[in-house]
Image 1: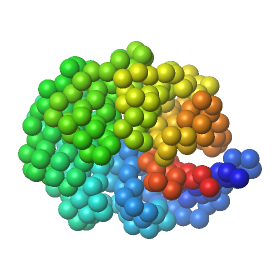
Image 2: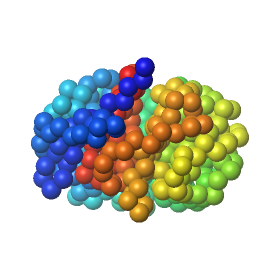
Image 3: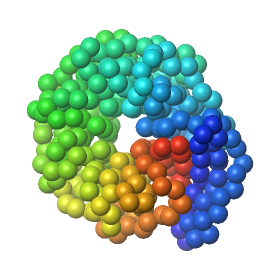
Image 4: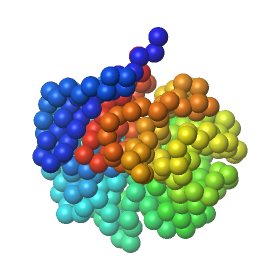
Length: 314
């Protein structure tokens, strides 16, 4: 029998609450406190190492699966850290406003910074410790083959914003953005093709579980699904018109999508049939959920304004 366990870390006005929510009982149990920040992205490496980044140059890390959190020093003075990617527990990168790229080779104990001139970056994705991509405004994609020491601008068939990227087996990469944009690369980001998503909405996130099965999400409750690597898409919309900012599937059936509060609605939906039907989780919070990261066991971390939530299906 499938059981839903929600573990909430409430970070609000210098207090972080780590709590467990049962969707039926809607009870909170406070057992931890930390300073708060607004988060924009989160990544888990293995079962224990976690990093979250966000507004105000915040970098938060945990080495014990989220039981304890530590603030890491950000070497640049920029407000928005949009995306974080680690190739292993030591090597990581962060992308953000004003072309900011941060990198670490020691798990975030120290970070070094650089700036890509003329860029505003929304995401970063490393396919190995050497090969990586970052994307942002005006259809810009930059690629590195030396761990981020230098970056080259890649031609893309769009001038729309590119919000998010994902990959499968390092060579296959998908990206989403403005006006229903879906891009695909079959050579690790060296070249890109523009696919037809069937949506004109701004897209925020993309997730693929293999080379064929993927989902995208965006404004107006948009969720679309492909079974052929992105060549064709069909609607898998949940019962909401709110913005859906993040989506993650651990296999072809089980997934989560979350988004922003509209008229009191903070959408948090789960599915066990690939998105044909959705179940709304009542978290008790009016917030903007911004990002999700799950491991293969279905242990998910969801971040938003003032909140980090652990979500697990057993």
